[in-house]
Image (tube, rainbow, N blue to C red):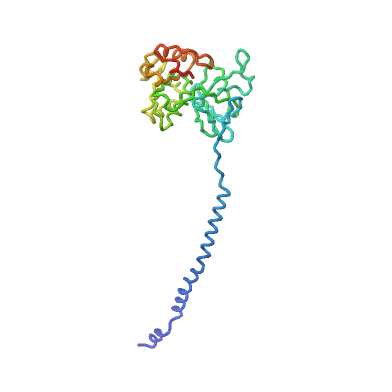
Length: 326
């Protein structure tokens, strides 16, 4: 064996010594630093938790009171106008502090001009009209009225002149009918024109209840197909709840390709679509539309009161307890 090889076997090289020294010293050093690392990480986590606890927004308290007042008119700013068709639009009013209206079903609101002198009737009194919002009662920060402009409607013409940023005085809510889930087996809703709004309010509320068992039939009449308000929303409800909602659209002046029924709400239309009067307390009929239509179907209203039952429904044998006029 050569001298060089023997020397190599006896004496470790500098490189071997350095490698052993590095390998033997590193694990000990890492082990000694581990408690410090864990302590540092723990302190940072605790500090982060405290920071988040201090900076995270507090949960919003449950709203208990409506921003509306049933005793007094309050001015609400018009936030947005969304045109619907040639004579109708949605008017979105701003509610303070992102609050919801919390209006009960079924109820309406009373509206007048913010300046009482700006819109008066023939006797010099401020014009006041009821409107039913189409926005949900829990919609935050907004209240939406769907308004159809009638040439003989002083309030609807006035609202149609409002510009974004202007205000309308609103009072309410005024409870119209204390709806209770599953109180009736069948409910018929007969409406025309902008009279769809309270019927839509009732439908959206009732059908959203997973325990609803009441079957609804909507008979909705208009002059032309373009006049059908909330059609997209109504068709979506029918598609979502096919076993509890059916809709009949009725037109007075249909186009050539219209395949639905034509004419006014008649005795035959009601007989074909509404439960018999013999069902007594199991059936309820709600009516809302232009005064001539309401009078023809259920008799005239007496102002804000129901008035005597008349028209087609009386002829078909329904009682006053079975019919409600919005």
